[in-house]
Length: 200
Length: 200
DNA sequence: ATTTTGTTTAACAATTTTGTCAAACAATAA
DNA sequence: TTATTGTTTGACAAAATTGTTAAACAAAAT
Image 1 (cartoon, each protein chain N blue to C red):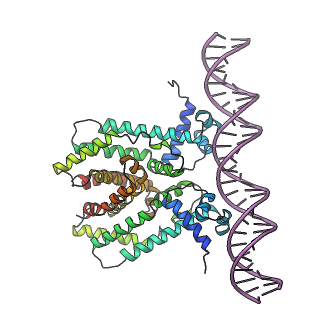
Image 2: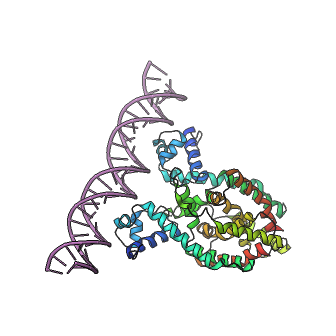
Image 3: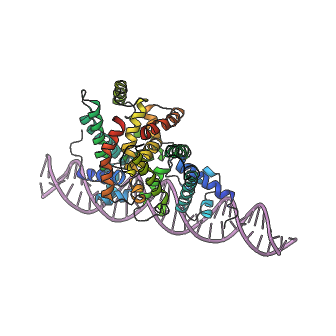
């Protein structure tokens, strides 16, 4: 088990995470990552054999962090559906401020190389919690609290309304002439709008 | 004025469009594009000075095609709001089957190189029609047909619900164990769901 | 003090990718 | 037929990027 996890290694990871997920610089070279981390380029190879390994480690980290945040807030068993959704929305919004480009990165990376069957998705597939969540949605439809539709569609609606505006941020900011601050405020305002739309 | 637009030039454009927007292979090299078009690689340079020029021309084409489709279906002046939205949804869904990755491509490309202020957005900004559309939305809120909120939020809701499931397709297909066919059907089913959600 | 271990650096090699150029080729016009 | 024009090709050069290696260095252990 790794005891230290050298500070340099962490610096590189952080720099990469920032470039990829926060700034959307998917083409960033090892040199750029090293510069951002303030270290010699070859250290990227020293700590992570190759550029691709760094990619995947950084992605794994971000996903793990996200999963933890979700578990600790939405994971409890006996909370009302509405509260559960509210917490989910909170975590997602919070997360998307930190790493707005993580979904785009994921999708981009999946298609990077058709042959190289990358394990970007490795653990996601065996998602027991997903099934549970879908079941909760179905139950709630039975109660009549939310519109009847295939539970998957409800989930997709929720994620769409939350994530798309974050992904498309740079585009919309220009088109709508919004400043960073204005856009962020607009995203925050969406919480109530989304809840109203889906739960009312 | 260009009379011919050589068949080879078109083949290259088509191949690039397919790779970028249909398959999401943003890293595709000139060699790969040439292979897909079935032509010699140097022809890419012959017809389009550089790779980047090809990128931007192809993007311009796709945007123009989309704009035309929208104008011809949503552009009329005196049609009921509901019909307008229905048509908009139809065009967007249709378009997203043809080029699912166009939005991701746009955003990726915007962040490709921070310095190089690319004109990917050139014409989008001066969007008179956007303002008009927002005005129509506002009027409709006055009538009480749709929920009151900042018109921009309504637009974002609409685009989110339409576009996100397309963008995230490769991810969701794996997570939900959906086949291509199943996913496409699910996307089609969304039309009614979206209209219900936003207009009811 | 000196081994040993782990970290950092610079130089290098290998690879990949792009772009240029001149020659070959084909189609059409003179 | 012979020019002329436009198209295609292969060879080459240049640039960018990645990954390896050996040597320098620093810290800790013996």
